[in-house]
Length: 176
Image 1 (tube, rainbow, N blue to C red):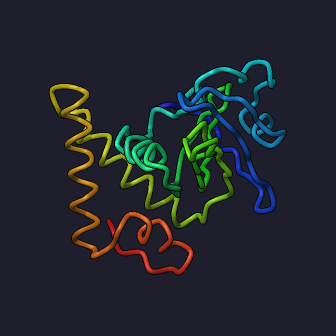
Image 2 (image 1 turned 45 degrees about the vertical axis):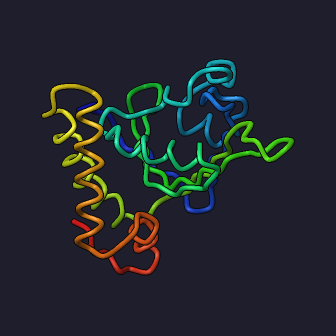
């Protein structure tokens, strides 16, 4: 588990980034640069996972990539790393960018400050997913086990992933 201080994104701040279809950063706004403590030249053409925090389960990113590659938007709670080892939580909205003939040519992400209750619950859920992923024999098995656990929890709560994510806005949390 990576240590560091938590950085808090202000409620009125929005982090914006754009990537190509492989996830390489093409644009990062000032808020992104500031909270992640990077210079623009350090991020451009780098994989977006340069800010991935080790506490994040691979399952969450698999679900995210599956959605956006299929041309769908996705919302998720993400814990990111700053360059110096600090961390910050975001509520991310990631959408595909479409070019000619409706083909996906990249991705656009807006990230806002999440509800504190979401951070508490996501920390617990993500720790459980990471544990299940790590207990498997390999990467594919870990992803399958993590996705299975997430789907089981959603099914038990009678929710889709989107319903679960948005339950923090309506205060109807039911997945644990």
